[in-house]
Image (cartoon, rainbow, N blue to C red; front, side, top):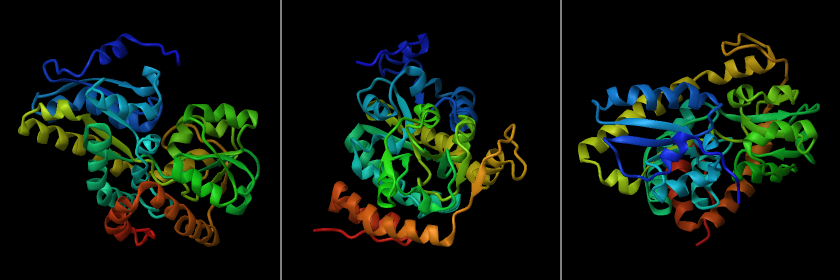
Length: 347
């Protein structure tokens, strides 16, 4: 059994889901990353009450501060351990493989395209969250596009062949394996040490996340091919607690999360990759802090074509079998229609 260190706030959050004067117990994703610092924290701790006319306040922590795994957040949310949980959807696909369809690599290369893909997937995600985790979706926010950090020289996608590469989710790992790499499952927080010790050669995460977490201190080459999608974070509320709210409060809370948190994160994602790459490589102006000096390896058209072929001929069909024909068909009719990709469906 994992040993966890519980702060006073964490103990309070674990007390149960009953609302006390509409104070919400909220568990966010990684506390060290920009999504939590720049958007999650100010929204729940400062802006929520004003945006809901005083109907709600919140007590916030993150799953890493609680000492639990990201994969456990929705499970615990459904059990009523806290009111609101937000984590990377890809962390939970062991419980809900159909949720992988929210974040498909390579098909959205801009924030606008990624947001359109997420909006197309949202009805599916809402059904998945209700059925699998007894929870109601309040909003979906992005991390930056997921690119490749490597320790050791690489010059193209082909150089990943035979290397041990940490994927940012199951579909990313499957794609890496289809490209000839050895896909490794390692938690985000364990990546720097694993790179330093040579346990892995490369790792996939968002450019901004890698910069904030100091991955540039233990890696030296940056491949900008978006092999890991956008790692959307689903913000959801325990279904019983949500059902106990008035219709007016339900609408008010969803609108506040969308406008005050998700929309702001999407707006920041526009053009954010350029700043993050500048910060990691020293090429261009970095507005986030001190620049690093990683070697930039830009993806070629050949790299993109090779990766897309592997995605469409191997990775997506394998996911369709895992998720089932019903979900694959729904994906084709919504997300697939938006991004111009069709997954073969076995009846």
